[in-house]
Image 1: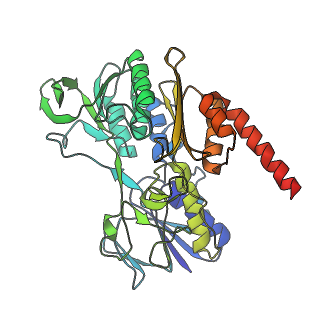
Image 2 (image 1 turned 90 degrees about the vertical axis):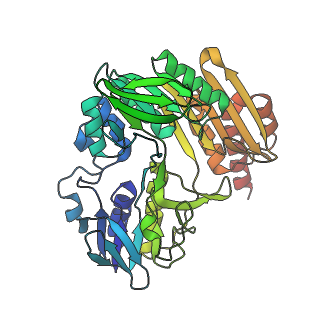
Image 3 (image 1 turned 60 degrees about the horizontal axis):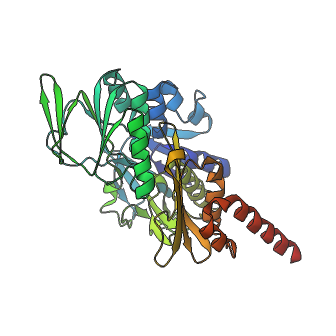
Length: 420
């Protein structure tokens, strides 16, 4: 059996290793399109902070790791898939035959069409090559403008701030992390950043970047003009699925998969940032571009490729964020569901905020700031789709009773299980 895995990020590597463990006699080829050893993009901010060197971003550190496992590591970029003949065509014209194919090509920065954005001094923070360029320019006192204050943007912001730059952040939304936090929470994060010396412009978009002898001028829709030595784009990502256009593999936002991570074409699977999988909380298909979900999808896909029928338990939106020392969390349907109930509790002076969203008697989503002791409980209640019973009303009256509700329902389930 020949397995070809397109993409050498975390999903691709975990899938390759899982296949080797469960199908030891099969051929496994891992195709990556960068000249680096397989690495984690999520480690790049830690590289910029200085906590690790470049080798610290590598997914595996033992010399000869892939060869020792009998995994063929190949450089190349896929430009097409012929599902009828089961062949992948690479950019250099080479073809790879397969019996099982895993698409784990990840995503790429979505850069908006802004005049002057394509040019010197502007970088995304996505590859090790980007990190090298940013590290050279983001020196103490340098003027840096970052476009985007989403989840990834806030992680990059932390790394830039640690380098002592004069940092301005521009976010189109009316608050920071608008796809993860409600208005109150997003506003609290913005206020926190201001106390740390980061200038945040929300409700603003970059309209042009102009270059001159003294650096760049970044013009905003609000009329403000920001001076910059370096511009970072963190305006979202898009799945790398363009090469599948004429393949017959069905895609919407990403590659549509079933509970086995298989596409509509038998033998073709997808995992990670480019896969669209079922979210059991919202009841819809989503692309969840976070590494824990990518890892689990890769494991499930590989087991099915090896002939071991395995179902994905679901994909839940999980985000825990450290923004310059302020811990925030977002789980599931944090913005609520039609007909659902919700409760909010905010203590601005203490820097704490809690928002709970219910569907009938189940907690389906939440936002929190400063409630670090309840993060595990929130995740457990949302992912477990726990029936709260009378505890739903108790939480509506006092949302701080999360731990008590969790323990009470767990105890009730144990009693029920023993009774049976």
